[in-house]
Image 1 (cartoon, rainbow, N blue to C red):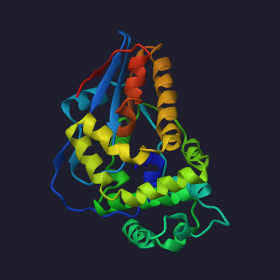
Image 2: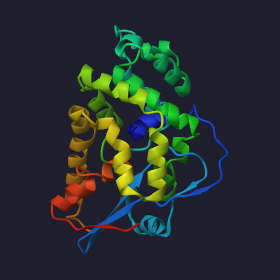
Image 3: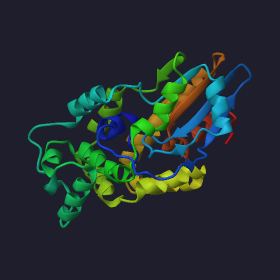
Length: 285
């Protein structure tokens, strides 16, 4: 499941521990769009990473050095602020118990997933179904020792200290998309979270290898047979973001756009949409 940056910060920042694995050399995919006086790099990120993942390749390092502006999905916020915003959207009164929002016979799976995510079933009872889903989806990341403190955006924030920053969405706008999902779609999201125990590891391996086909395939199960989820969480947002990038190409400058890797791969990705608009998008790394 794709977890937005704000959710990672809210759910993982104070809950995860390092796993002590040796350093991993990653080669994340990087694209470039240029028209002469404007240059925009597109970097696919993983919001929460285990310690010791080295992803600043020579090409990525050059893009970081040359860009005058960093653009991310949402603006950086402290874990406390991100958590408070998440709670505002995620919590609600009068919800049915989480156990009745999963398929019959899935209660044991639910309990196991809650333990893996480090939350109680009672806590999940007070969350909207989508929020319970993304909370449980953090379990595999927690097991891998992943943290937003090690994520790509956290490192980029340090690298771009003193330079311009911008964001494509606010955290509130991002979470409002989840709140607007019909309950039936939210329950699909919950079911996928319970079935996706190995999804994070698969996505991470594809991202580290820079294998865009494998990366796109790793996100496929989250949306297969769920067009409303795909439209709301991916396609519509990709369309807005590609529109922003197209407009930004009208002004001179050098920009690094760093968004979740799932938004840059596949037939309806930001990369594909920019190409459909007539831009030449070249794979750099």
